[in-house]
Length: 93
Image (cartoon, rainbow, N blue to C red; front, side):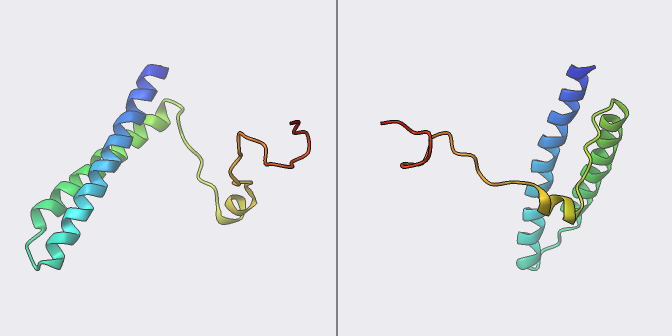
């Protein structure tokens, strides 16, 4: 089951990158006043596929909970350095 879940996650990651590329293509076409209906239709099909993959991932128990704004602000997201800072306590030289 874990292999299936990982495969679905891999497909989701790949599809996200493809969707971003399609969105960039649509923006370029719009900026040049070109017809982007074909690219927009492909993007909508990708979104339908994405919804299906997310549903399958959630069914297998891989649901990812999204944090609300308060929870995200409370997270300690500072980068952790592997090397101690010069003069930091506990460093011996």
